[in-house]
Length: 223
Image (cartoon, rainbow, N blue to C red; front, top):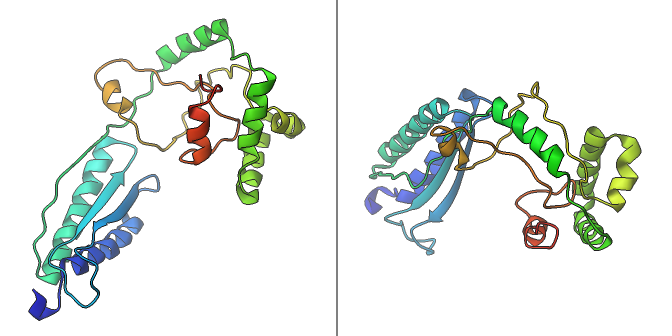
């Protein structure tokens, strides 16, 4: 209501505040992301009559995501009450968690050993090196730390010069560590035995969601 000085944008901002307070009441692996899709207008001296905000709620398991999602919806309802506005929402996408399969993993491990690693040439190595060295110093220092942790400090210089993986890393059935990410492969895993494995398509140490990732994915390295 313009007469009350409240707007839908106020509600969206209050929802952001409420969601931030939820962070102390959810598991460490859970995430709440948001973006203002439509603030309702561009005039600063007008109380806008609508707004649209997009939220992404993430957690390791479906049960956990449902619980957290309901709390986020309740925050939105509360923000609407506080601003005397109306709220509605729709679910535009949802992914299930990925179910690991140790039996298939052991078979894939044997098959990958039989097939062998990619055979890189000098042009591949040079292209990978250019991408790797294009990262800023802070990112590159972090990448170097990761290389040392995985391959050992004695291998660092060799990998920086030829940053493409050329070995098959053995399957470690003891490794049950959680890796975050979003993929609709989890939906498949609920319906059929599913296998997910990594193949070298970028330089060692590559950072996802970057132009370097996009560039290499369309290059001869990935092909």
